[in-house]
Image (tube, rainbow, N blue to C red; front, side, top):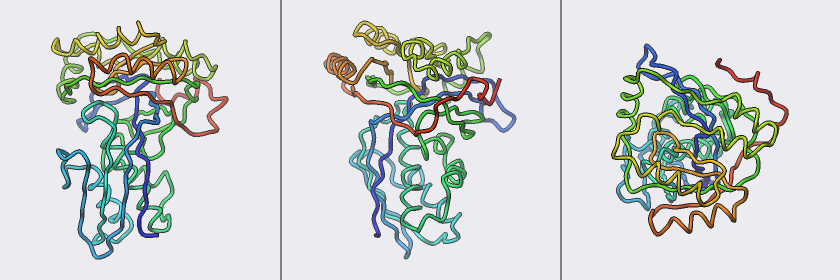
Length: 301
């Protein structure tokens, strides 16, 4: 086996809180994150002779160290002790770019998993997460996916209760938002409303989909510039189409709504496609074994 294909699943923020700026320049985060079936396909081939090749069906993406997938190759082989090795990477993209869905981080995580398989699994998943943290803050989460509480700058992960079975409609407006701009606005705000992370956690633990959807919250929505009004319009439209709750993911600009099932989510996505070019339906994906977790398992008060 010299070539491996991996799914790179999109990430959604069920909740997102920024607790403050750290001395190292990063921000202290507290997020409940969920992977979904919308995904890219990442194919990787090892090049022991060295050199890097990165190709994508999105021709505008960088193919050098500005692409997190390439950085992941370098970090993996450095950790393995074979820094002169390289890889060929093929990215078949579906996750929108500049959406707040961690598409680049998920690609990097898929590269790490693929290289690990190709090289005989020298690293455990926690070790891959540690390598991923050197590539980007969302990469450790994307290595494993599922439903997780992320703290620190996003690299400290704890398994969370699974989101109850549902469908998700995702809409990406025809613009992106600069992440540094939103963090600057967060730093400048005088007061802050915080997500009810504990209530959201408890609702998921109880299998209460409606209760979970109603508690979704992203603090970056509070500081969006006026030009981003379409985000709130999309939230309203998703709710009018039957979403139990709707919220922006990450620093945007994608918005998603939680529906009782995939058919309802697909109908909503179809209804919005005439106004929003990039609309998708998906279902949550995740790991088994999260049942029985309590809100007391939250790592940060």
